[in-house]
Length: 117
Length: 107
Image (spheres, each protein chain N blue to C red):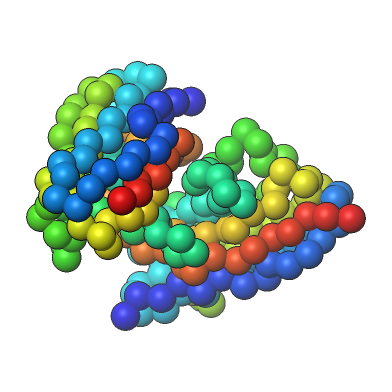
């Protein structure tokens, strides 16, 4: 069974940092690209960042470019999102999603990031 | 970046109704268009990929059509369990794979 389990969310002050993790199981992790998608409270879905299967190519939404870093450890079947210089507007549920074809076939349950002083 | 315009933003219908949601891309995306369903407190679920292909296990009352810039998502006979928010998403070429604003469907 494919499973994606996010962790690392929590309360952080504006300007602070946080690292999210997404632990994968039930499939060959190194064969798939992954994205991070977020959803602010009561709002729609927003693409955040993407990484290819090897980690050699990464992409970012303009809203997080220069502040967030996506990475992966294929030996640990884990995806990461290092978030820095956090802003109130970064507050959201963050989902990791596995790319299949062009769509997000599988999603994690999400982890909540709260940015507040 | 490609912008996706989805309408309506909300919709109220009755059980058994035919429901249609539209999504327009700011440029030609061929058929690189997905539709997702999100129920409250849950992660989104992929329903339709490549504009018109039903994800395995998804009921046949859901369908999608379109190509280029204009796309349509249809529920042929609305059921109570279809109450959710629906999103279109384009995935032309490289990220970002932008989403539409969402359509909240109520009964």
